[in-house]
Image (cartoon, each protein chain N blue to C red):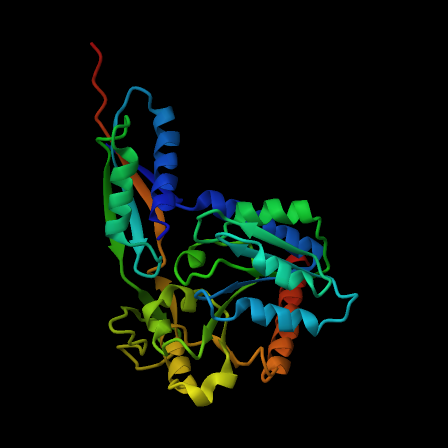
Length: 119
Length: 225
């Protein structure tokens, strides 16, 4: 359960970016969480809300893209999602593949308010 | 209006870990990060390992716990530098803690740095400490399905050590099934079964460490040439 630490790292990044956009409100932050990242989506959302409550970032939304485990077959280069830990390649049946997705723990984007056009 | 960020959430930790990795490479230090549930036998493995090294070996230990310096006191008996990292509630070690304690300890290579993480199969797997390998321990008094329940750490570990094998006659535990489960998650994971009490399997563990050290040095030499 280190979601509070993860949430505060995300908020540090938002605060850092917000410094460069002083006149623009950050509406949302988009993150990618892999199923192997050991981060629980709901616990992260809870921690995020708890940390932003009563702060200037209270309105900030956390948008999570959940990334399932993806493998690439070392025999035929097929890329496939893993269900029920079935690691055999669905195309050629080979048992050797390498993990290419599912460990993500990334900040993907910030959603910023459209700046007002000054007259 | 969307601004692309594309940054690791733990990029600050990753940056520090990369610095540590570079320091290990320069000083020829092999760093391994031991991870398991509480009570799987990390400290016992380290005690037995330290007791097998000649006194003049260049070895140091960093041991993490939420509270107490009990582990450091246990490990200090073997005459090698040991430091306790008391995290005060944090459920894992991070690169900053390792960096600070390593500096305070003044450990310099070439040598072996053994890091004992906080007993936890979840959070330590997210934090890179600059180590050459994560090693996951599973004891025979746990369930064979631990690798399936905690795939993150078994995927990232280079080696799985099955501990407390002296207890096998007394428990219903199938090492074959545990290994099968670990390899479902991570087909290439290395495997050693041992008992820190009887010493069974220790030759294999020490050979693994030696072979791994040679491999890391070879790779470092290739990178710098």
